[in-house]
Image 1 (cartoon, rainbow, N blue to C red):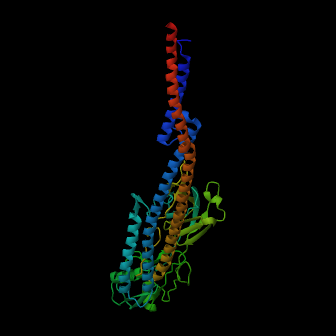
Image 2 (image 1 turned 180 degrees about the vertical axis):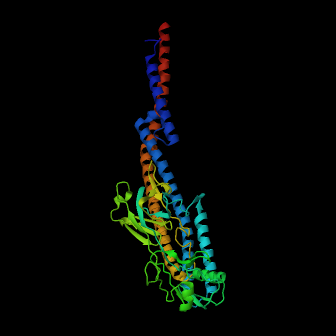
Image 3 (image 1 turned 30 degrees about the vertical axis):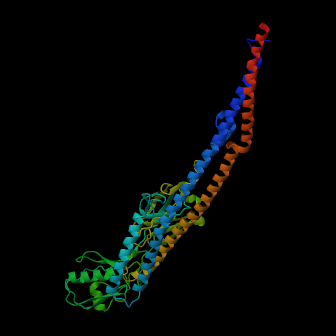
Length: 471
């Protein structure tokens, strides 16, 4: 029998402390709901669950990002819907103006509405925003750095890089020179017809009066006079390309000779004698050397419409632009430096680089090639119908792209939400406590603690028995 070292008490106390620690851990798990509250509880489980929680938070944020992207697309599409309506209205007005029952004053009244609609298209294109970010001004399209061309637009299939081509021949306008100055006083009366629009000249009109009458008539006839009134004047069509014609007729031979214009509208001084002068399209040669990205597009073709050129290839590759008037250089190449700067990147994943690129083409009248619509010009309504059809096709194409983006984002949101749900379940299996099992442990530890306390009390009484030996 020993007094200084009560082995029974020491053993009971050790077990009691262990039971107390176990009971504390059970209490912590039951109160927090987590199986892992400290790194020591499950080092690998803690590491895995924390990484998965990071992914879950990223997925939830990416889902909200995608929803915000859908809101951006809705905003852009709503604005494009109004632009579509205005283009359709302008086309309706063009069809109305194409009817010869309308006088010039009627067409001028129609043109007033067209001008207002064009201004509104430009206003919507420049002011449509989402969170101060402009959507339809071209800032969300690829940035292209170049010279000698404007209004450059590229499709989604155009890769970044430098695209080179040469302008062998500039687009030209229909033209002829009279090689004659206007008389000081007109000696003959008659009429001059510019592409179907007729103006009358009276004998005795001064040079200034004749010049002003011809200038106004040419303008309405979609042409212009080149040269001052006291010099040899020339006539040029306003349009460029093979569709541009210059049919100027005079009512009688005497007036035609005085003005230097063939009576039947055929100009022997033109580049095509005996024929009505016509313009010519630009001619472009694509550079397919290693220095040019066109090397990857051996089947790319060029389509012309005056100064406007469209380069297209399979799989949706397309570039459109407007050449500077009169530019040609068979030696120096034009470089289109296409960059990935501009398109909006939506981060739709939990990790780096998981992005979706959204491109929105410019929707202003210049980019749609309808900024020069003029229904008062001769042939203007018919030309406008064609231009507006092309513009409507461009807007519809851009809206179709937006619709595809939107549908993709809907699936993205659904996928992200499902993945987040499944990962939450996985984290729960690792980190959450099983309340029923833990309650069993808690009850066991609680009973053991009470038993240990009782045993320790009994062990502490054992040394008292030694006193009986001293009696």
